[in-house]
Length: 144
Image (cartoon, rainbow, N blue to C red; front, side, top):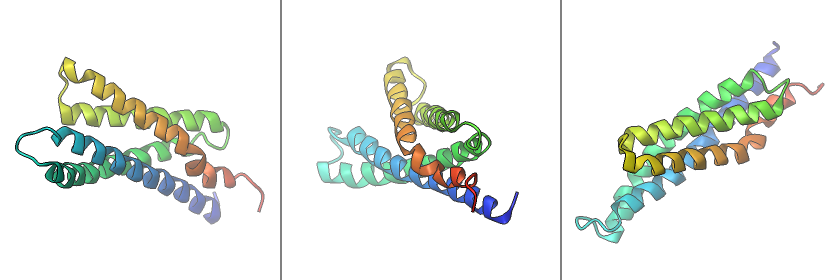
């Protein structure tokens, strides 16, 4: 592998991590805010500041980890099969975010719907972001 190919692979992984962090921060902010809305101990402003702020931070951390793992796995198949790499990125993101949601909410049966919804949203976001994320990895195939 040449130095240029290696640089492009890291650029693709960095893009998946960045996309994961952004999507995770937005999702975490929304989830954190909605979890505190209606709680008697928090006003609407406090729910947005505390729930949204902490949710965004934790969502970004989980998102960057998920994007990096998915990007590293996609690197191995993107050159031969772009659709498989895109699917791998989406499935990996959905499963890891669903596991993180189950860890934060608890594995109770009444939380199962939220866990599945979080995984489905993460998977869909990863599928939609995949062409941008995987572009540097595909570029390694094109002749210079």
